[in-house]
Length: 338
Image 1 (cartoon, rainbow, N blue to C red):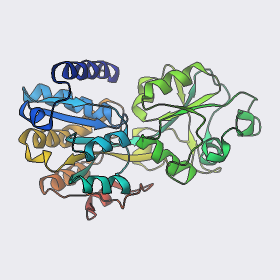
Image 2 (image 1 turned 60 degrees about the vertical axis):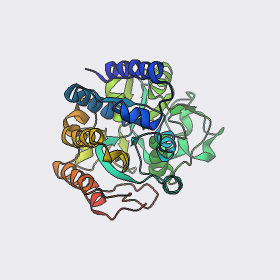
Image 3 (image 1 turned 45 degrees about the vertical axis):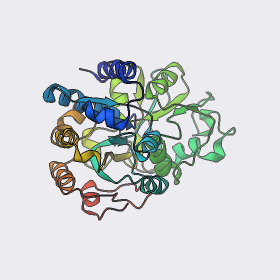
């Protein structure tokens, strides 16, 4: 089943749940054997694939998966509205505070590697690579209203209007991209086509010769017929590298590869169906992440994540801010912070 098929099915399930239950209380949802997940559109393809396989295997538990963005998902999670939050970046300091105020404790579990993929239209016949500095020139706040043509990016580029698209401010992909490219999380020009729905970005970029966008690798893999992936040079002298399983695992696709996560509410993990779902996720996440276009973690990382979950290791291995270039095994060995 393709990611598009899964997306259509998930939409139908969400509509059915809304029609049957509307605003189900947490107690009613638990009584009905419902696991509620929301958050990152980047992590969504993996979680939806896991949810589909788990529901088929469990024969009774229903799993709903939303795509309100990493930030939007954490808002619901910290209010106690969801059991699990998909996140394409670690929980931020202000979100940690909100969860603490709401009495929500959690376990942070990496589930795969993603590679943020920079894309242009198939009709773009002049971009063969971009450097991180060139991406910064496009996206930094000072470029707003000023950097409007490709000829301003590199000598030899044509005078074609530069039209940008990317995730909105609630997206963890937006946070990580701005941190890695501009040097500060959430630091970006605002005059671009912003959407939490990556399919909107796909459509926007595919229609415009001068358009450029970015999103998770799975969406590029699903839309290779409409878009071109752009090799990225970490420096002017470095080779251009496209994201792939090989280039993420060998560390050559930098600085736009990163781990992605699920956050499990500790209280929810007391329910056997949630524990079974998370165990299923960590045992089958490697094969399913590859199926939908992501890069699986090393086997030792899944084993360590499962150990942390069984031991109910609470908190985040980060200090409330994303870190570029972190090895996931090192993260899993850190002391958790709440």
